[in-house]
Image (cartoon, rainbow, N blue to C red; front, side, top):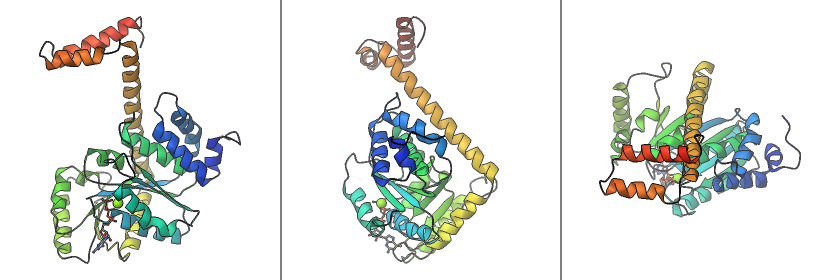
Length: 324
Ligand SMILES: Nc1nc2c(ncn2[C@@H]2O[C@H](COP(=O)(O)OP(=O)(O)OP(=O)(O)O)[C@@H](O)[C@H]2O)c(=O)[nH]1
Ligand SMILES: [Mg+2]
């Protein structure tokens, strides 16, 4: 499928860095309802599915950006092109952490086969995970072989962003108790590979043991792959080539498993978008303030939430003459 030569999509497909940046901005600014973002994804989508999407998540300050920087070097050394999305769900601004990410990766700035982009968007339809997933599609279409997606923190947003990737690396560090926090937040379940970073610090072996102990309690799923626990020292790059080898092994383990994961991901994406679109139509069909009024009725105990939702849906459908 050839895009017309002069469009933004065509320039993205040609690997033009400025076009890639603009395309991602369009996705950040747009929503699903036929805006530039949706049209762009539509044009690029037939050219995607080739890149290996790797999520890097874990505790704040765990060394994720340092690790990503080292991974870039390792991946470039084998001649592959790499794109990076540094996602900061907590801040709508290019604040400290995100700026720090950029500075750390600056040694790759002159390399045309490396593209680094911070994303700090919240409150868009489709959610942060949707926006990040679409941005990853842009990099995929632009010919990047690997897309690294760094997320800060250990909350629900991170779990969702991690689920847009083909493989998820969870980074923990010794001696902070954050490993326990991560286990509570459900982040253990999403790891395909664990990294015990800051291996130069005291307590590294205890950290590895506690991860392995937690893993032994988990049922082995996903085709018998038990997430390996690797020690790294991101500041020196120690253990990073092994991490990359492990990620390659994970990717190559089975075509069937990979296809299954992609189906699960597509299912989640399509369901989320369908829900968002229906909700947007519902809001359009209702008079202004109807939702707020229903909420006030629920808060004031005049109506229960189920009855309120039922009434809103019924009203919207009636307004639209039965079609929504
Ligand atoms: N001692 C030691 N320090 C490290 C190691 N890796 C990273 N650091 C340091 O840890 C600090 C945080 O590193 P970052 O790479 O910014 O961590 P991050 O996880 O990206 O941080 P956020 O994005 O803010 O959550 C920096 O001062 C790094 O130099 C390591 O292996 N050993
Ligand atoms: Mg970081």
